[in-house]
Length: 471
Image (cartoon, rainbow, N blue to C red; front, side, top):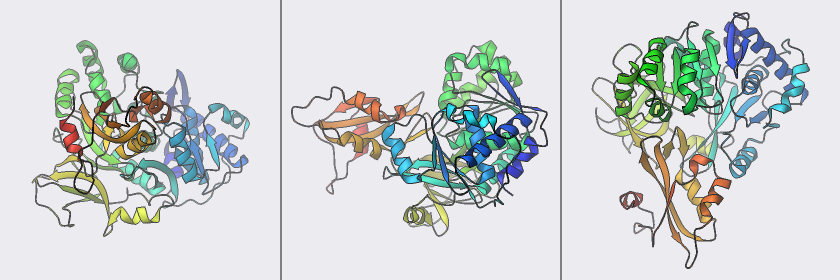
């Protein structure tokens, strides 16, 4: 099976039913089907064909949905690009993916409206064909493209629909960015597999969140911890009304503080379901829909997903001991685009090395303990310090630089840079240059000037010492 065949359950089977609302305009599943077909014809007219890549650099909009669906039926590989990325980061992806087309303006698709709304002749796509390449930074700071197959998306949707009891009766409020696997891999496939209604937002706006919930009356919400922290500011009466309509709140992309889970339950009357996924794997582990949603844990492996927690020598560890999570399952990606060695390095005896440390309790609940590397996760976005450090070291006034993550009550973590300036140099203007060249979430929120960086005898920066030196 391929994704189009799964999506046909709604696109053709529920053609007359309301499907999606965006910016006050409603569309039926038949409308979505027609738009996807017109976009598929448009892609083919551009000379793009099966196996080619298209990079899509757009905020949440209906055209992203059109392009993703058009790709899944033509065999073109969808490559979403984070809209917070700047030229430096975009150029790396373009150079690596070598797309046949780069879409960064909805107006580029204006001609698609005049194309036929019937399906073009479709290639015989298989489950192992690549549906998308989603870029995720590695610990070296080099951004790598994770190849996600039709089967990866199919397995993910099947697991979530089953385990979270998602049905056509649900209503999903979706503010998650569709350039990220949280929105693209969870929201879109679950929507079309079941036929529920979705209101797509361009972004999560704290100032209008209460209004959106009260107006749309969703039953389902996928969010990141930062969103839940902001939702704790909802007035009690409004929270009660929202909670009365809701069925399931899900949190992922970064650890959810147990206190937030507890405070949210008291305010909205619901226990958030926390789960664990990655760009390379989509969803791996989830707290149960029915049963204890244990604070601080991510629950149990999803159907078909096997998890081992190993020590540095590759041995299984005892319950409650900390080790690195290794995974197997139909959700695992097909490898990194154009990087055979990086793909081989990512596996140990056929098991994917997540780089995440964790423990498994006697009763099976898994708790994440942080990254094996020094990854920073801020508002659900991954920040690898090496990438920011390399940019800082390119600046003439910087002699040395080290970036660490510092806990933040709203964003989970924020990046802080420790900088050794060159003699007589001023750091004025450095922050502005960072903003011009790095995505906003990667820009250090504080720059601490130090005389030297603490290092080991082998020259490695001791970042744990830097953390204790925060002013």
